Length: 261
Image 1 (cartoon, rainbow, N blue to C red):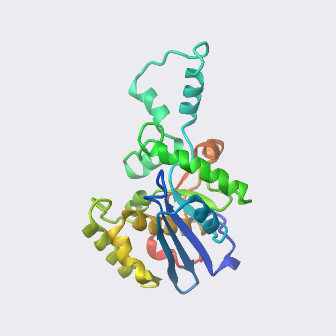
Image 2: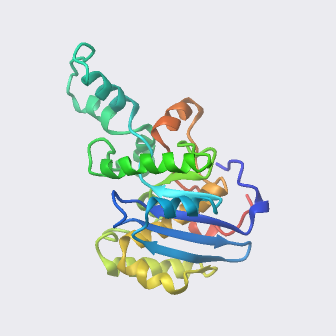
Image 3: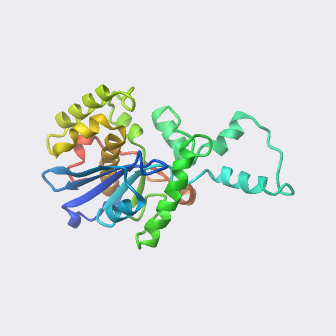
């Protein structure tokens, strides 16, 4: 589906990607500059803080952050009820019920599209990173930027690099733990996108999973800037504004350069 893209008057444009961790260590930032003929990875930085991310967000069309933007509505309600025993209810405890607490609507969409669940923001360790992300989204809002957790408006979108690569049908098994796999993926990226200049950053993309994922996040942000992803359906829009919505590109990597629909 093609949504209304960011105005093409913004070309050349910049997009950014953040592989967010609970601390600065493990957090990477990538910035890509786009024209109608080429793209260039102009920045790739490790151990990035919230101030640097906020400054980068102010200078780009879209910034993709690899982290859940919120928690499942059912989980939020469950925790609120559990804090007051007079309101608490007795759950049935079945897996079906527990999954409503563990997964957001966007996670269910990823499951339907790719056949696998993302990590749960309410039951996996990524919850610590989501706590940092909540503060970061507040900082971005305080800086004057429009933050829409559904991704429809504003500069910030939630991305999922692993899902993005699977949608592009790349063989990524082991890429997060094996530099040799990342090396093959970087070489594939260079072959598939001769217009994308990775500059002197290729070695860092191979040695650092965080750096590699930040670049993929910036590529997914470009898809969002062009409106080439599936937005929340109308019946889930309000929920996506609370829980977040993962941008899954609806175009191939080699189609990201062209601004034409």
